Amino acid sequence: MKGYMGKILHIDLTDQTTRVHRPGEDFLKKYVGGVSLATRLVYDNTPKGVDALSPENELCLATSVFAATPVPVGTKHAAAAKSPLTGFITDCLASSYFSATIRRAGYDAIVVKGKAEKPTYLFIDDDVVEFRDAANLWGKETFETEEAIRAELGDQMVRSCTIGPAGENLVRFANLTNDRGRQAGRGGLGAVMGSKQLKAIALRGSHSVEVADLDGLCAMALELAEKAQGLKTEKYRNLGTVANVLTLNRLGILPTRNFQEGVFEAAEQVSGEYLQEHHKEKAVACLGCPIACEQIVKVKEGPYKGARTSVDYESLFAVGTCCGIDNAAGIIKAIDTCDRLGMDTMSAGVVVAWAMECFERGLITKKKCDGLELRFGNDQAEVELLEKIARREGIGDLLAEGVKRAAEKLGKGSELFAIHVKGLEFPGYDPRGAQTFAVGSAVGTRGGCHNRSLAYEADTHGEVDRFSADPEKGRIACDKENLAGIFDIVMLCKFIRGCLSDAWSDVSQLYTLTTGMEMTADDLHQVTERSWNLKKAFNIREGWTKEDDWLPARFLEDPIPAGASKGSVVKPDDLRIMIDAYYEARGWTPDGLIPKEKLVALGLEDIAEEVGV
Picture (cartoon, rainbow, N blue to C red):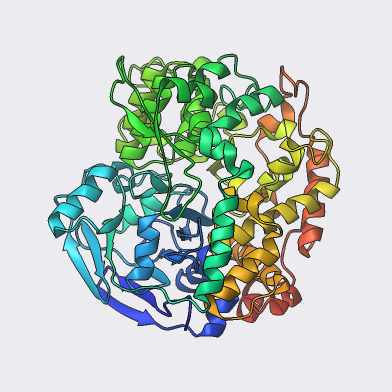
């Protein structure tokens, strides 16, 4: 078998046993890898209706078929499970050395179930799996956990995926961290690991990945790498995604003060350009990446001196503009705090912004906030609050539940400005001025998500009138989801998408050269369609209804007050029309359910019997 390792490792923490499943070529080609393979493993191994924080919720890691091969930006892995934040599927991507080492240890995927009797970490050394005592690691932050494991094992080549105090304390948006700056961030997978008393998964591998046509693959990989250092990726190389700050501010869709506004008056002071001039230390690349988009920044003076982290746009918007923070050093400190404690910066920032609005509206008092003056713009209060959230101290215990549950518990009308879809806190694009993204966000299987949809491209790139509500936007949102799906399945970084002449044909050719199994563009379309329907089927099985595909009340009732998108709002009737058009484009029923015949045509006969209509 070429391209694949041909093994899936299953680990039971409860009885400390392992088994290896050897799927055939037909299965591997059907699901390919990444998000598609991880979702299939979640569906098959997680009982219906299980609590996301119970031992029966299985954590699945699935690699890219391109990981540890010459293909640039292909060394990634997907992590998936039932989300403790949403109750639906969550699938996350991470990259670099840990991803490659899963393959070098001999596996295409790892599935972990059960719960350890005491804090434990796994050490997977090729065919040997050790269940090691993690008592000395419990309570440590993410980065120091990685270093402590290397020191204990006496090998600097060991790669680890870890959780921090947030995961240990079951913060519902805790994340997984590997290779310091890489996180499987959204949906609370860190809490899933914490609920299993699993502190880390450490890997060492000695295998190589054998490809079918090494010469052909190297030639195509080299051409792609050269393109990836051209104009199509210049933004990412120079500033990283924080280049988006001024662009979105100019468009009037930069989320500000808990999405009350779309323009931040201090955008210049927190922009990518400002960070580059005052705080940038260096740019870093993932393993096998010719782009190097990760921007490492550091605070050189003042109360946050020494804070050092990587900053991307979504983190900056969430803990920055969404919280009204105009102090770049404070934003760096907040991101650094989240990363070390093991929390998703996006969810953390949005839930803090909600708390700030509650405070300013008088819905929560200073006493309830443990003495914090929780006003927009108070970066010191934000940093202190993030610590409380990770440790579930005081008001942090409420906010650790995520904005949906926190608002439901507080009440007092705060649900109207709790900005989430399906329980997942919203990303950094205001859909009132980006109405293709409005429908793409509403229907997202893991919640409102810029990474799984890419629908915002149509709005921000001028492909459509971003203020109009055209049913055609439902079809566009479907197409953009499918485009994103290619990259999530083969695990190519989306930043390289502009370097492909045709994503479907180029990726299918790379797959064929890697595995020796013929994959056409039409085949890849079907794999992508199968993946989206599989995720939707999981959600249906777990209780999804049509009402879950909707947007927060703020976007439907409150027009953007100023800027280039002034006056824009998503009208409920228009949103319904666009969602219905999306369902039609997917081949689903008007209620968003999947016909049996569609599932059968996609080779999902077993699932058709369970959730098809």
